[in-house]
Length: 258
Image (cartoon, rainbow, N blue to C red; front, top):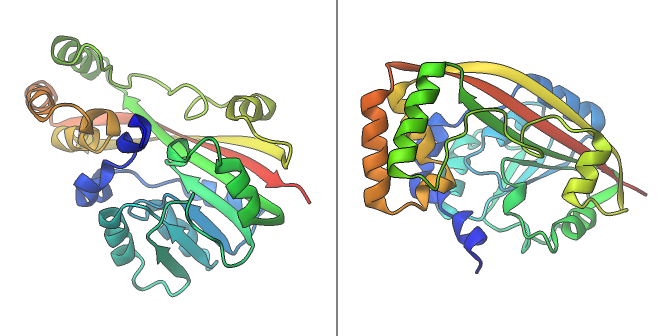
């Protein structure tokens, strides 16, 4: 197992906290995705179900795959009253679709899927003409004082790790042209009709919850425990009562060509 795959499996250590502090996704994203492709839908790396719940509200059938049992347990609780959602504890790479899907979507997780097989697996799961929707949230502090405090703490205690202090580079944040995105992601010829959308919004969290949010990110989870504890204790001392965040949600669309 590679370092990347190990890093991609640390979220279950804090599954409940992940569910509590991670943001959801804009309603406009749901509208745009469903205007592009319909169900039934296959979700890759469903996590605790932030996106699952959003799509389930539209009434389409969703098969939500999630490899981590702890994350999948939170997901199952979230959608327990949604008969149109099936939770499957599996990696996308190992999942065998029982039928073609009209939509395959992935929130915050496509970069963890094996690059050698992910496009072939997506094409195999989709019906001809079916849509692929990949999206990520990225956030950063809106206040210059918070930014300075974060940077100083990281430079002192974890100089190899920088906090996110602005829009995340493509393909996660900054809106790219559709052809640029396709080239960067290595989209194969089985897919076309590519497009992008960018949604900008804000949210405010407590200083403690901002630290908790960082604790759910893989780069912080793989730190040595004592280093992580020292960094988070310092952040708890220097952050104010509230942290206002700029948020970008980037959506990338592609269609499985007949």
